[in-house]
Length: 106
Image 1 (cartoon, rainbow, N blue to C red):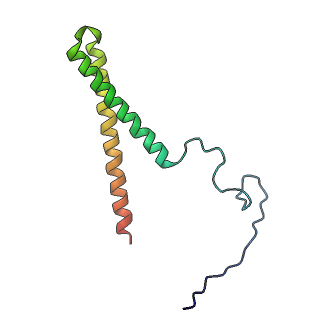
Image 2 (image 1 turned 60 degrees about the vertical axis):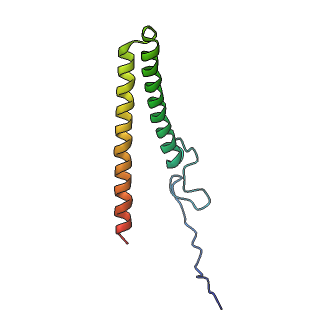
Image 3 (image 1 turned 90 degrees about the vertical axis):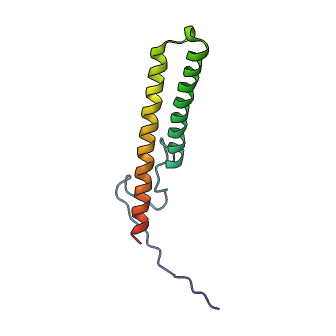
C-alpha cells in the first residue's frame, strides 16, 4: 500500500517590522505572564476551593469557639465563597454551552 504525503513549498516570509511574524521565532510571546488556559483555570478553581474551605473553617470555629471569631467575619467569608462558586458555575455553564455549539457545527 503506497501512502503519499502531501508535499508543499516552503515560503520564506520577509518581515519589515520586528513586531511582524517571523518564522525563525516562535509565534507565541516569549514572556507568557498568564500561562496556559488550563493553568489559569486550575488557579481560579483552587482559589474558589480556598474560599470554600476558609468559610467552612470559620463556621466550625463559630460553633465550637464562639468568642474566637466575629460573626461578621464568618458572614463575609460565606458570602465571598458563595459569590465565587456562583461565578464559577456560570463560567462552567457557558463553557459547556460553547462546547455543545462547537460540536453542533460539524
